Amino acid sequence: MAGAELVLRGGRVVDPETGLDAIADVAIAAGRIAEIGTGLPPALDEADATGLVVTAGFVDLHSHVNDLAGLRLQALDGVTTALELEAGASPVQAAYRAVAAEGRPVNYGFAASWAQARMAEVAGFPADGDVASILRRLGDPAWQRPAGPAQLTALLSRVERDLADGALGIGVLLGYAPDVDPEEYVRVAGLAAEAGVPTFTHARDLIEMRPSAAVDGAQEIVRAAGQTGAHMHYCHVNSTSQRHIDRVLGLVGRAQAAGSRISTEAYPYGSGMTAIGAAFLAPERLGERGLVPASLTYAPTGERVASEARLRELRQADPGGLAIIELLDEDDPADRRLLMRSLTFPGAVVASDAMPLTWTVAGDPLAWPPPATAITHPRTAGTFSRALRLLTRGEEALSLAEALAKCSLEPARLLEDSVPAMRRKGRIRPGADADVVVFDPATVADRATYADSTRPSAGIRHVLVNGTFVVRDSAIVPDARPGRPVRAEPR
Ligand SMILES: [Zn+2]
Image: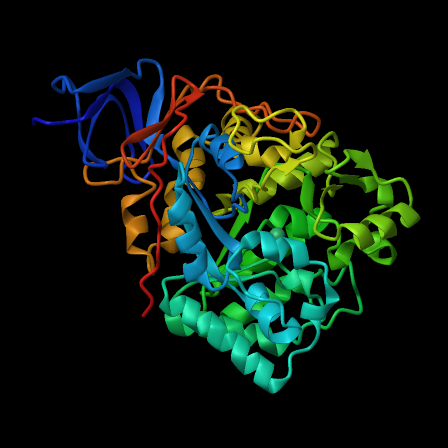
């Protein structure tokens, strides 16, 4: 073999699909893995991987990050593909165009956005395909109103157009519009079933939280799968289920056993992060989740919300401002076990729900590293390393290949029926995309914390996207923008 551009030399190559786990060289050419073997000939560039694991880069199905600093933190956590599937974007073409114009270090893609289509048709907000616009309007009651028949038809046709344009499925921020007619959700799932793509749902409130709700959030997802045959992906089971994780996963597991296509994801943190104006963070509704104002930390000032009055004030003044919300207690062993069950559930994938940085003091968004005044949720920087640490070195002790499958192979498989490009991701074998992470399995760990949220993970040595280094020797390669779009091919 001649002409390899790069050889990763002498690492432990782990491919969860084939079971390969052996010391070998990996040769890369033209953005793909060209060859895996021992004693491969020298290439133009070489990187020593002795003592390190060489495997497929992580595929994040749930990233809201649209800024360079946030994407770099994700790359430093081993992520090579970061997809916006829960919020999505509409028109999806506008989202792809905007990203293509600026370039990204990692691969990207979008689902159609039910919320943004609804914001346009029910509230009259301009649909610009920008995820930041969704976040800004999330708490606005105007888009959460019941849709009239003509509005419903119009919003569904926006979603259909996005699917025809290659959207990776339909993102449904249902939990942010808690009084939407359950029939509308079934119609959305029906569209997904017709197009052969998944839906990605932020579940409605659980019946334990809101006994007056029209429907239980978990049952609704399961029922839509049964009624329409759509593949329903249940976003961040950990955060929307809180201490009802066992009930929710029990329900999902029974429906899966009965033949429904339902998949789940989780991130390994007890706190969530969302817009402070979200419906379920209204002062009068905090009690449903066992929360008080002080369970919220408002990111732009770093303050713990002192009172109901202050919460009202912040929701009024800055409804799109991000807040960290304590949902499970990471210091409580029972809560920690719940969190781990959401990760170890069969087929559950690791997905970050990564958030863009909030710049509490204006600064250069291209500066690296970001200043300490730019903050986010630690899940942005640490989800995958933390999951590997907890799954392979904690009480769970999954095999390394099992843990890696949850980060790369299984998320790729989850999409590949409708996204042919995903068949070349999540694997390390000849012909696969050269999206590769090289890390130290003994030391890989998250370092970001709630107080210091942008500390990059430890133990990640090299990250390649389409054969180009975006992280080399644990440092960001400043100008690398090798990310490519990932699109679906709908039926
Ligand atoms: Zn969500």
